[in-house]
Image (cartoon, rainbow, N blue to C red; front, top):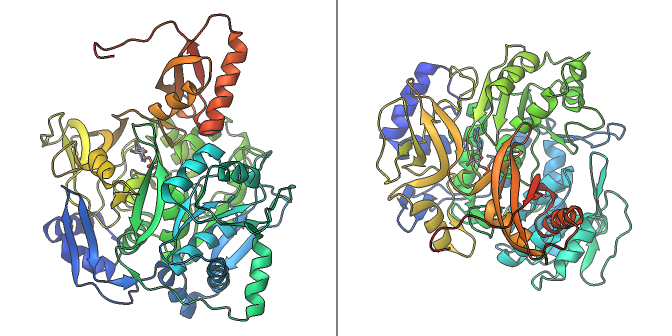
Amino acid sequence: MNLQIKSFDEYKRVYDYSVNEPENFWAEIASSFTWKRKWDKVLEWNFKEPNIEWFKGATLNITENCLDRHLENNADTPAIIWEPNDPEEDHRVLTYRQLHDKVCQFANVLKNNGAKKGDRVCIYLPMVPELAIAVLACARIGAIHSVVFGGFSAQSIADRINDASCSLVITADGGFRGNKDIPLKDIIDDALVQCRSVNKVIVLTRSRAAISMIKGRDVWWEDEIKKVETQGNPDCPAEEMDAEDVLFILYTSGSTGKPKGVVHTCGGYMVYAGYTFANVFQYQPGEVFFCTADIGWITGHSYIVYGPLSQGATNIMFEGIPTWPTPGRFWDIVDKYKVNILYTAPTAIRSLMSFGDEPLQGKDLSSITKLGSVGEPINEEAWHWYNEKIGKKQAPIVDTWWQTENGGIMISPIAGVTPTKPGYATLPLPGIQPVLVDENGKEIEGNGVSGNLCIKFPWPGIIRTTYGDHERCRQTYFSTYENMYFTGDGCLRDEDGYYRITGRVDDVLNVSGHRIGTAEVENAINMHSDVVESAVVGYPHEIKGQGVYAYVILGSSEHDKELTRKNILQTVTRIIGAIAKPDKIQFVTGLPKTRSG
Ligand code: PRX
């Protein structure tokens, strides 16, 4: 089967086939990937425990699919085009051959530093090509990567490192984001005070900030590469991985205080990321794909690294932010590299929209043929602006709904195939069986209805467990409604059977497309010595989608309120990171309580 569906009729046919014969459907999709050993059984599952195994008995290495298999015909195709934060700095291009060689080289560095199959490696790097190289090098040797977004605090990193008992950390001296310098190594040093499992830190040179290097623990990336070069073996054979071996852990927020490590496995995740990339974006050889996410989030894992590379695509990787040095930054990049497919978040669209048409003047956007949106509901105004000003009404918009736990896009138009509707993620991809349920878990059938969104049959990219705590996985996703995966999202299905995601129905906020648990923010606020109690809720925010609103009870009324407000913000920044800072803090003397408190 071709991974790409070419007409709406074909979509309907293939969709029905995927529901009636899921195992045959997925076996055909999986056949377009490179396996070291074919599976004995396509799927074994129950949602009760849950136990989900895809492509049982198969072995593979995802990097052979992302790198080696392109060397025969596409070795010189650019795999990653890197655009730095500062437009004055030179950009970099890595072809598939070069990326392959750098990944092998760094994989050997990892081995020299004691990393082996199954070890957990924490990656805390800026958006430079070495981030993708580090991720792929882990996958090459079968080490499990846990990428932590560069905006998280030392405390958050320490929690993640300890939860997974990482033995190795890969970071940089510092990074750049807009006009800010991020002291990555200093933050890691603060984190590691609390981490006993880490015995090696590999440090990339990026910002040339002054940092401390601890003897015996910290080594420079560049020095280690030189050692590998003098050892004279540039190749690194790809470790043979079982389809269900863990590929990576990625932490995400839920409704309780502690982020959980979502676990994805090698075979299923590869098939799902590759299939959805090829199909949703209808990627054609030679096209330039630009996903603006950070690799620290699932969107970057699936649509900068694994999805596009598995399909031999050319990817833009951007280090900076949409508004620096000017709000025309994205459009300059589109113009410079003749981007064909742009995949970004509603927050970015709304923010850029607020600058009016001026940043668009003189920018040639005619290369754009497809647009994508991800991470949060896109309001109609932003959808129309994106369609008219960026796509010139010629580029279909794929509003892609999915989650960290899903591995890849779940409900979305297929570009140029599915008729779109502003604000609608439209229809499930073949292989995905969504259902709406009421509070009692009863399926709500028919169209023109709304309910809680569940998925009633597994797909290859589904979460397997939460790292170190399988019961938590069961409780969070598989216990609310019997025999279904619960998404935590509310959803309506209109008269045409089109899905529109209405937002989270649990205590999770979506701030600028980032998931933040209200309990997590409350815990952080409560760490402040003057705070007795707090309650955090979301409120509609014009740019961020949702803002963070905190009600706070202070221990005494003697405080300088303004200073306390700033101190609380500082505390949240320390405990979680600046992304979770409340937009509004209201001091109150009481909070509503249920009878049980
Ligand atoms: O509420 C949904 C929202 O983002 C949540 C998942 O967040 P995360 O795991 O961080 O992954 C974001 C990137 C895949 C979902 O539960 N969400 C994501 N995409 C959309 C969306 N809401 C509406 N429309 C979307 N296209």
